[in-house]
Image 1 (cartoon, rainbow over the protein chains, first blue to last red):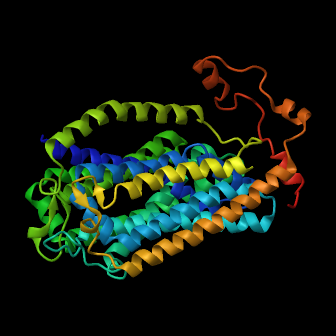
Image 2: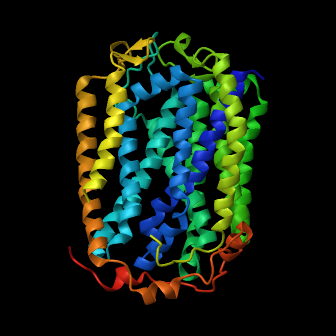
Image 3: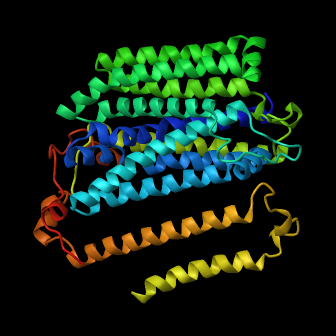
Length: 339
Length: 123
């Protein structure tokens, strides 16, 4: 395995970590208005993600940092080409943060309802835009010889990208519901348990549609799977994880169900990444302009130094992250200094 | 109160010095700022997004001041209330901290937010 391959794998795993961790708190936000009816229930939902949501978001920053350092040409093309789209992403991230922090700081019901709506819509918008971004990366973008992208905001909203966006929303809503089965109690928990199978069916239908459309219309990705058939185990395992999660949540084994959902998200992302490999950004104008893990990477000394830092740093991050989740394990309890 | 503004000014002034002092280079002696501009973007796009960020941050800053003022006007909770929620002792070890925060370890159940839900102090 070359250094470039190692960094490709690490980058995919970091994005998977982001989708799994920030994914469940986005999911909680997506279902916030439907699931929690009273002020107390809404506070419970907010506080179930309270200790961890902002740490989770930093995985996206880490992903951006790794892209910048390991594959700077992709970073340059992507962040310039998706400028307006990324601006909108930042806008909803800022609003989402403000809504979580501001919501419970005033007793006024209108104040709280306003921020509840902002929280839910910004979570939905973030999940949707991430999905649209993945859809565009999977379909390829109009890259020229210099790696400059010619895509307006409307170009990015192709039917395929919209489908991936909606699927992502359904996936993270389901993931958030799985998380909440561990955190909520009583009547609220019962209502969440009823929603899980329904959200599961919706997601399953959308995900199947996305896979079929990808297989039928995205030639580069299809050929990659046809050339080398073994990676088919990734989407197959994702399906297995979804089915396993469904049975575990019905059996009341909520932690296992949540882990299954997390594994499914990682496996779906890996399935997409395998289909792209060795491309990082496919050019829809000319396949010679594709940015790959070889032509878009930093020099090998840079990658080596980064690898040393990652080998020291990532275990530490995983250790304290696990510590925080262990610390706040079990059902959510409202305390005087809660959100 | 003025010191709050002064510390912020010092931080931003340091940043300002570093960024303007480096011009015309964006990467010292390697890449000029004018050569590093993204060709895929128009000035209008950058200006619009910058303006929206400025408006949004100003709004959030005003809301922040409004909330902060509310907390200052209300003042800290009465001493008896703070003592009622105080832990019996300060934990010394990680083991103790983790045990104390385990599921239902406190047995306290749901504690409502007393100062916020009962009294609103208008600034």
